[in-house]
Image 1 (cartoon, rainbow, N blue to C red):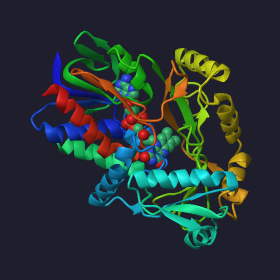
Image 2 (spheres, protein in one colour):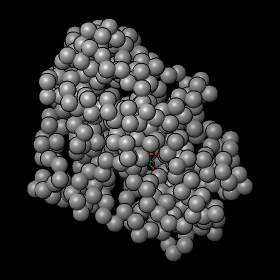
Image 3 (tube, rainbow, N blue to C red):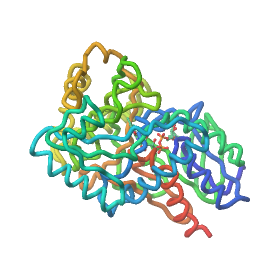
Image 4 (cartoon, protein in one colour):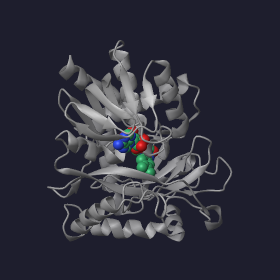
Length: 399
Ligand SMILES: Cc1cc2nc3c(=O)[nH]c(=O)nc-3n(C[C@H](O)[C@H](O)[C@H](O)COP(=O)(O)OP(=O)(O)OC[C@H]3O[C@@H](n4cnc5c(N)ncnc54)[C@H](O)[C@@H]3O)c2cc1C
């Protein structure tokens, strides 16, 4: 039987950054990473917006608040060291009416509490930053929000991991736990410590180890519409004021690393975990469970799931997406937005006892295993800082 000191399940940005951090701290340890696909980054880590967030949405007591500002700096430094282009375009959060102004103030308060630089700007100043921006009276400008290509980042991470002596094994699926070993599609592995970074399947893996008992992952699909305008059509990302009671940020404009613009992502409830297009990856058991959970939330939830689901489903319509984007910027023309981009799916954790969507990252585990649940946005931004945090915890239990 094959034996390793650390076994990581999942070759997304979280699995790779954790594997590298473990190898940095325990240089002599054998580190094996399993990825069920033919390549790393084929799920959320290669399908996200590519926004390196600043960290002002999250309440100060959260892990997200603690890790986003440092994660932002670490991701920027990583991109610089690998010569991966970064668009330091910043971001405007714009208001649509009087009722949204207190929410802007709350974001400013959170930014201050999280030591994130923010500028409160008038509508006139917002238009100096981005002439097409539409806002009611005032806006927030975040100078440290940037964008980069997540596919290039994860490609560089995979190369680094291999150069550092980590084995990254593709087409290798974690199947189940068998006593003190793990059964995989490529044989049985014994491991000193297992780190579960399985994204959309992290709750299932965790339950094999007695964790994630009152959590289930609910998949939410993020669709994007790509603009055909030339690079530079917008100078900065433009976001609406978010509803801070749910973890999604609303349809917004992202300026990509190459200067091109996309709108999205949506947060449409998906019907199974990897439902990217039509019947892709259909699994009846998942479909039945997701439908059961979603129907339950329609009947009763601590947030208004029915309202959220109804408003999100409308975003399958291109016209609806363009209408929402037009509230944020002038000159949005339907003929520029004819191409849907590659969708991504959020591995959003649902607390089935409290019937609420978990807002923060969740880490569970013991001296034998660690489970990284709810690694949702801004998990990509946070990944390097998050890995340090996770390995601090592991080091405290295994040494
Ligand atoms: C639409 C969308 C937009 C987003 N935008 C942003 C953004 O702009 N900025 C930001 O910071 N964050 C963003 N995020 C969040 C970010 O993408 C995630 O936080 C991050 O990618 C999570 O990484 P991960 O490694 O946990 O998950 P994943 O990338 O999903 O990786 C998990 C891996 O585990 C593998 N796996 C699953 N089960 C098994 C198994 N049984 N055996 C072996 N392997 C397995 C999967 O194949 C997958 O490769 C966005 C997410 C989405 C979906």
